[in-house]
Length: 385
Image (cartoon, rainbow, N blue to C red; front, side, top):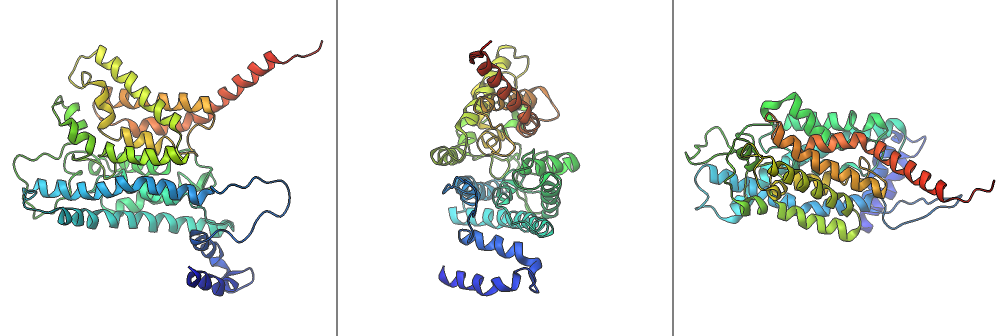
């Protein structure tokens, strides 16, 4: 690490104000804080210092995502070789390597485009580069179908960073989750590439697919009236789906990391699951088709519900901030997610829309929670006549 620090110290004078490469000052500082703690501290006023800064918070979230990332790579290869009928003759490492080769370019494109735009905006504003995109850059590939073209990933990432984040002032100011903004952009701009059975399984033009294989996700099957999918496969993730959303088990491992470290709000997680279960029970009571009759708890292990509840709804920027507000916010997300996915026949997944909708109303929820607290305290106050 000393060698790396020496490089930064030697190049630092060349990016200071008045130097030839001052226009790279924000980029230089951004890479420096990626490896080391900032060199400056507060000089005046009263300040509270904490060992958990934005960089460490983002690092913990990325760590929590690793199980989903690794399993997503394996499942990408698994679904490919299963589709072409060669799964039985293919070993673990070949399966994983295939998925690695397919997923890594998507992650690289997401980071290069997203961080590149953030570097430009930081330099224009003269601000330091924030680490917020460290998480968004990995979330975007994980919520996309594996067959999404790289140029679409680039366009969606640029849209999410510019329109969904930077126009509001950058990290900490956005009102919507950037990764979901990217997915929503692609869903409405290029619906053919974001739906159907062919987008969830990686296949080349020369691949011959076996007759018994279907690339439909369990949620698509349920929407079509076929609820006889493997519950164990759905829980552990051996099913077609977005790269990081298939394995509820891997997602729960990430949830444990977020809860133990205090980075993710367990209240939002629990309330989101509760809302989903409540709506599932209501639909079961009034079931008029097989999808409404799907056992309420199975909604939690199919589609993007688990991933959204753990990694998307808990976004500290776009979610509710008050403690009571988190319960209301999460509960409504779970309620709306199941309602949208079951009632809307044209859109068999509701987690994305539910979270984006509640992102919009999160400030309003917090407002009424605060107003309620003020009114309650005023009633308890002893005001002299």
